[in-house]
Image (cartoon, rainbow, N blue to C red; front, side, top):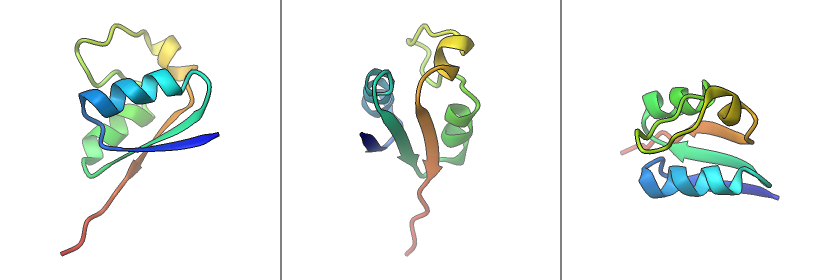
Length: 69
């Protein structure tokens, strides 16, 4: 199953980590820096104790959402 999560805050990121163990997860956010962090397999929350190898084995992808006025 493919899952999309809007917002890469504490709840969105934690949920994505959990679901990505069995599903393909796309995290959608307006912050380019957060998206780059996810796509480079770097933990974006200090509380999350994950290694680079663990993150790279998960099925998480970041996607930029551009809002227009």
